[in-house]
Image (cartoon, rainbow, N blue to C red; front, top):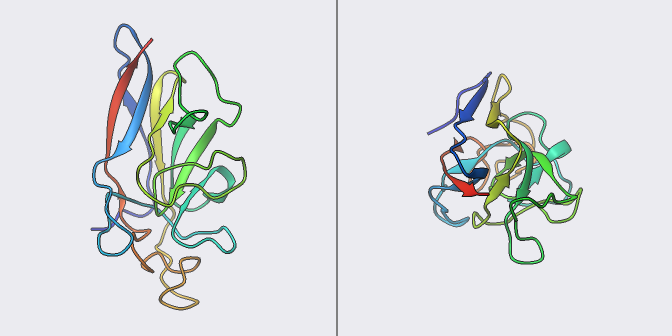
Length: 166
């Protein structure tokens, strides 16, 4: 399965009474060795990075935009409703769904992350370019080939979401 090219659309999520945030997680975690999982967008532009997640300026061709989002990791990076993280992000892409807790670094190397936002209205924007990068470099080069290694950068996304109490 591959995602469609040349897409740009917004998905909106209704805010229910008493809910002040929304969190997203992957439906299928997969594994880097044998299974795609349910997230994979783009080639990796970070130098030296293998199969990882990218964020913000590292996402230029295919990405999800979740305005004002934060990773929900273990403390001290745990997401808390009513508290804004100084390292809020907007874009996520790469082979895994997650952010780095340090600005400018590559993100998760697995699909155990949850990404949350308090910015309303709750929305997510899906943006893809006109083609899939499958030429140049070698078949195993994740920087030039979206089909290289698992999970591939051609999958798109299949996510769960959960509204969070105020």
